[in-house]
Amino acid sequence: MRMRLSRTAWLILGIGVLVIALGTLYMVYSRQVSEQQELAASLSQAQARLPKVISDRQAAEAELAQGQDKLAQATSLLDKSQAQFPKSAGSIEYDEAFFEIAFACDLEVMSLTASEPSDKKVKDIDITFSVFSFEVEVRGEVADILDFVSDIATSPHFTGATVEVVNIEIKEPAAAGKTELPTATISLVGYNYEGK
View (tube, one colour):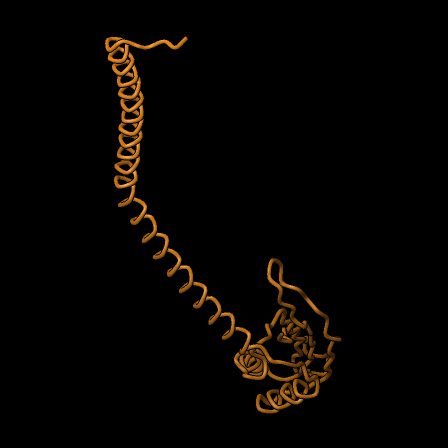
């Protein structure tokens, strides 16, 4: 037994299907409109942040360039400083320099002692210096002794060295009236850079 639907039933059924289809389309359309609004809001926020991001990037690039310039300057200064240090502490060369300077200042070298070089590492930097020390005793006039100390301090032989102590001893005249020349002990500490 076959049931036949009347025209009215078909019409109601068609309207029902149409309402369901329209409802589904409306829901899809509403969802798309909502997503488009969210995307538009996100795009608007991104566009509002873009100038600040570009500005921050330019500032960071400028800061990086300044940092690279400072690093280049510091590296250059380090290279210049390292170049000023003698590469090796040739004790004989220093001995000769002491005697040459003493002779030029009319002084007599009484004694000259040198320590064995030892390594000293600079904190926070991977640089090791060789440290050495000399002690020289000379005899002569006080003015000549002072010239000797000044010449050592400015000598190209001792660019990596520092005069640490100068001890001048002036003797009292003897009872016979003979005056002994003053003596001086000069302590010098030097640094050599061994390089990489």
